[in-house]
Length: 112
Image (cartoon, rainbow, N blue to C red; front, side):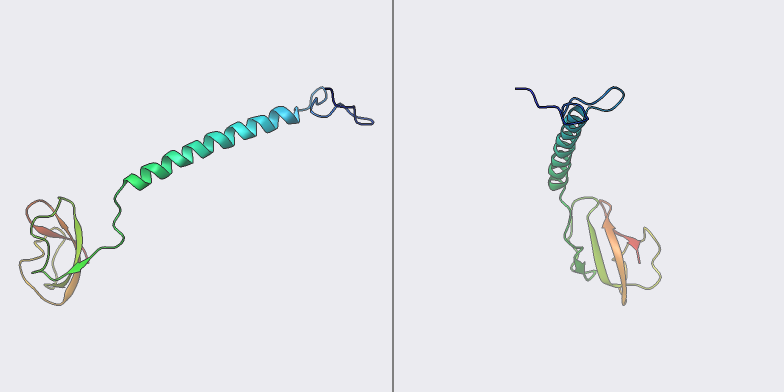
């Protein structure tokens, strides 16, 4: 079935010489949106597979896990004053809060 020609213009969807056919353009947009949707679904699935912590748990130096996975992160609330980055966070105690990580052999200072 053919579309009737609009008065003074081309048949809808047919375009004119030198103009972009709107139907083809819209079909291209729909394809791009479909591809973008599939890419977004793939990204969401990948992000769900990553085990992000909801928050970093706080401990005292004596309650830190003994042998967590390498790279585990925690907060200590009773660290010694003036510990440098990478220092053994459990060597002494005090009243300073530090962000620490497990390097495979000790809890080390990551930040203050």
